[in-house]
Length: 137
Image 1 (cartoon, rainbow, N blue to C red):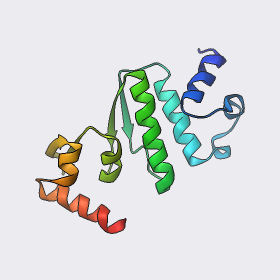
Image 2 (cartoon, rainbow, N blue to C red):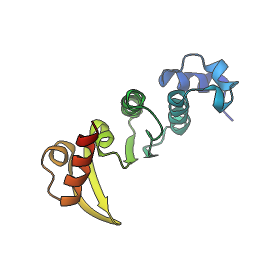
Image 3 (cartoon, rainbow, N blue to C red):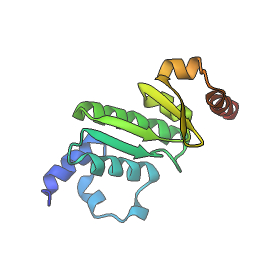
Image 4 (tube, rainbow, N blue to C red):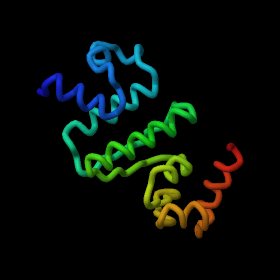
């Protein structure tokens, strides 16, 4: 079990400054963004070297998505951790990733530096993903 002070320090690291109140709250009393930041803090409390984030921005609005991704990148860099993000949102991946791997029907169809994948996709499926995101924006 962890000391409350250590947990509150980790909450501060993810910009949740009212840690004691948050620890006394039920999930429905916290916003979606606060819940994601709390999940990030909990996943990092043991200082892992690798963090697997499965759809970390699902069910969040665009502004909150960007802030959660920025926070995930900031905190994991501060802790020296590598983040692997699983997402259907290639734009979110492009926002945070150094490199991207695109899978289609269980096969890895393209891997490369984020800038290369986002600006010069080689695989047709990657182009479809990027086109669909660009049409929505």
